Every structure is written in structure tokens, then in C-alpha cells.
Amino acid sequence: MKLCQLKEPVFAAHRGLSSLFPENTMPAFIAALNLGCTMIELDVGVTKDNEVVVIHDDSLDRTTTGRGKICDNFYSDIFFRADSGVVLSSGKISAKVPRLEDVLNLVKNRAVLNIEIKSEVYKKGEDKKSLEAMIVELVEKKDMIDQVIFSSFNHKILLRIRNISKTANIGILTSGEPRPPVGLTRSLNAFSWHPGHVNLSKKHIRYYKRHTGKKVIPYTVNKPKKAAKLIKSGVSGFFTDYPQKFI
Ligand code: G3P
Ligand code: CA
View 1 (tube, rainbow, N blue to C red):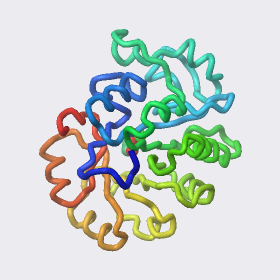
View 2: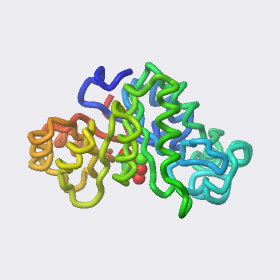
View 3: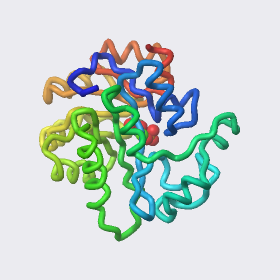
View 4: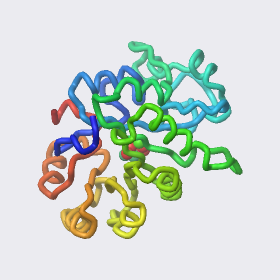
């Protein structure tokens, strides 16, 4: 599905259907698609041998049976030794750490994918250009540039994405007190603003939309009452761990 085909409000499955399946795994992404989610969010890191993998943290420790930093492990070691299901579903579901390529193959023509790039994925002193280039190249190779939003809290990463691709859709992530990033949206020609929902007011949403004409898609909204209020205030949708409550 292309971004221009999205029907609002969008209920974006945060790390897949992460309230029912291990976050950022194929079972969570398949379940989100089966539920009818039109947008799926995930986080990426990069392994020692430059494989782009789907995982939230910079280390394997919290979500898998593996240990150590993603960037210190080879993908084959992560594949054979790290299981997210054992940790996140008490062994009920076996789930590997997927490669971004696996997820792109799964969602192609079925949903929009929001790829969040974490700044912590880099080693100190490493050339930071390479990861963004690898990700954009992969998305372009799959002919999916119009089906993907690239987002990051690190706005230098977003600038590098824009320098690599004129057509990439960019989502500006912000945390803390919501300040509509009007100037940044214009300079990046961003697709959307992704603020935290706490303290996000109708005033912020209206101001941003009036000055940029772009979409506001807050995270991570799990309560129906809050969701209804945000939709009334003009958001285009939101990221949620519980899309099953809204679809
Ligand atoms: O993209 C919104 C949300 O995913 C950002 O926070 O920590 O869940 O990656 P986090
Ligand atoms: Ca994320």
C-alpha cells in the first residue's frame, strides 16, 4: 500500500501487533496484517556484518535470549542464538530477530511501513552515513519508496535520508514537550510529525497543520478515550500497541 492510499485515521501497529505477539518479530507483523492494519511501525539496527535487522534496543539483552550489542554480533549468530519469543511470550511463540528485508517482502503492497532508525545503533566513531544509505537502498531495491516512512528522533539522520533520496517520506519524531517542528518540516519537506501524545494539545496539532499542511501521527496511544480526543483534534492517526481495539 502506498502512503497516498492511506485512509484516515490510521492505526499503526507499534512494533507489529506487540500487545499479543513478541515485539518487532514476524509473528507480530503477520498478525498486524491479518488484523487489517494499514501501517506497521518497526525499529532497525545494524549487525557487525552490516545486516539491517529489526529490533528496538541497541542490544539483544531485553528482548531475546542472545546477549550483547547488535553491532558486535554477526547476523548468523543473532539468527541461531537469539530468540525473542522465548523471552517475550514465555516460550509460547518462537520468533527470530528478522532482517528488514524479510519484513519488506512481507508487507509489500499490503501496508505502509514506518522504519524508525535509532541513533544508538552506531558504534562511536563509525561513519554514520552508511546505515541510512543501506536502508534507503534496500527500500529502493524493493521498489517500495512510496510505501515507507523513515523516522527518527535523531534529526541529523533524517537530514542524511533527505540528502540520499529526494522522494523518501520522512517522519519527524519528537519527545518531551510537544513543539510543532514547522521549520524542520519545511527544510526536510517531511511527510509527517510524530510527537509523543502526552501534553499534545489541539492547539499544537492545529498550529502544525496550518503552517505545514502535513500530518500529525502521535505515539503510543493505547487508550480509546485518549484516541478519540486526538482524532477530534485533527491527528491523522496514531501508533498503538493495541490496534485490535480500534479496527
Ligand atoms: O515511532 C513511535 C515510537 O515507536 C517511538 O518510540 O521507543 O517505541 O521506539 P519507541
Ligand atoms: Ca519505534
